[in-house]
Amino acid sequence: MTESKARNFIEEIIDGDLESGRASHVLTRFPPEPNGYLHIGHAKSICLNFGTAMKYVGQCNLRYDDTNPVKEDDEYIQSIRRDVEWLGFTPEKVLFASDYFDYMFECALKLIDKGLAYVCDLNAEQIREYRGTLTEPGKNSPCRNRSIKENKQLFLEMRDGKYADGEKVLRAKIDMASPNLNMRDPIIYRILRATHHRTGDKWLIYPMYDFAHPLGDAHEGITHSICTLEFEDHRPLYDWVVQNCDCDPAPHQYEFARLNLTRTIMSKRYLKKLVDEKFVSGWDDPRMPTISGLRRRGFTPEAIRDFCERIGVAKSNSEVDAGLLEHCVREHLGQIAPRRMAVLDPLKVVIENYEGDGETLQSENLPKNEEAGTRDIKFSREIYIERSDFMENPPGKFFRLAPGKEVRLKDAYIIKCESVIKDENGSVTELRCSCDPDSKSGGPTAGRKIKGTLHWVDAASAVPCEVRLYDYLLNEGEGDFTDRLNSESLKVLPSALIEAAGTDALVGDRFQFMRQGYFNVDPDSTPGKKVFNLIVNLKDSYKG
Image (cartoon, rainbow, N blue to C red; front, side, top):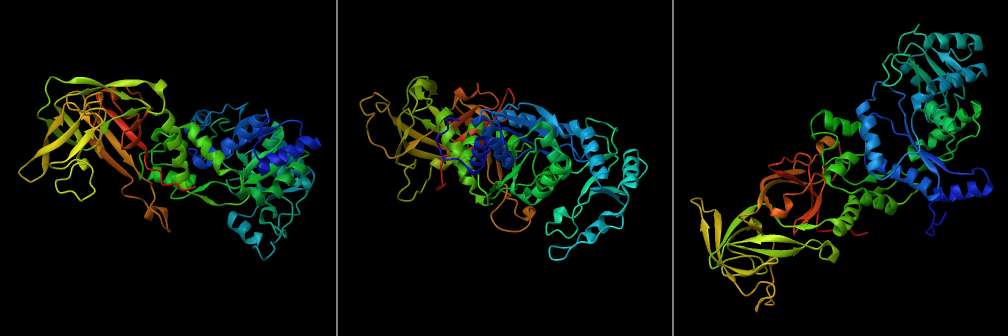
């Protein structure tokens, strides 16, 4: 360990374990269920598990919790692996809970032999009724006192397909009066006739998560099983399984606060509903908080890792301002995203006194990084500016273009609006301007002070593109998330223009569009037309 910064509580635990000899090394795991795409909350867990292992020169496994074949799919398995690697982490091993189905079955038989598990005939509703409440103890199942011999025979018959789905379950025999409802004879195996993505139809019974998870940790030799706070009440059951299945060495579970973000859905079930009911275009819709959605939006793995580091590891749940995530993205893009000029809502400008066929000017790629160099930008008599950068009757402090007013064109000339051309409906279609020919950089009047500077594109060389402006998927407030969906979360601008230097951009390339925001090239782009996604705007409203 060479880290000098303050330890989080997980690291303090690990330090103590290494000093006491309880652990000689660090082996963690990230155990997602492949029933959906990972979201930003999972990114925190990924960064914590893999990051902690890296800090201690240890290892971290990726283990798929594939114990429910009804909900799992190979599409999700592949997406999870992509997301983990995109975030910058390489698993020591890629494993599946199904790798241990034989081992888990033997552990269940061991519990039966010890008189610590029994086959129960109660249905799901009856089991809930017998469980009791937080203030009232549960009642023993009528099946609780079956003999070891009978329980073993019934369990083997469950495995062999003698009974229908839901007809019988295997339950741990613990304490129906326990104040922890998770310890009131929990189900550890159920009958489920479903084809598994890896084991096919070999198994007709599948272990429950609370049984499979500690056994998977034990089988792999996990030293520190780090999970989110909702599993804190499950830890006594975790320890009970590890102890009574004679796991050696015994893994330990530690809980941290899950990530909750403002204006963000953090439930795979709800995210799946958004996808299934076509509220969004798919799991990778740039408005989604999925890692694949953030990647398509243009967020960088470096920014997400920075965000996870800044929010830290806490013991109690809280809500994090989504603005912090955007702040981290904005900070990183400010260092790496080259500048380009793009006009999203074009208004034509004709510079009537400009002479010649045009010229090539120079513009910096990254003003704060000289090594990024410059690029060529074309300039000619006809250009386009943003429609919002012109007002015919502006207020007093409007420092953009208006009749009789001057502005500087970035890296070009000072121009003055001389006249306005409108169509039959009174809409402005074109501006006629003059320029100061000596105001170009290096010219006699280049230093003349003008309050407004506008971005622009050259009409002859600019390239058409589509720009997609994104906002939060949810409006602020309370209530069902479907009632809070933001109808303005996507705005498509099909007639935008970008300077010629933007035509060579590849899918995933990120840029700062001057005075607009940060954008990246979307996979929907075609050779004839680029599509750019708004990543974040330039204005940073986060106050940390």
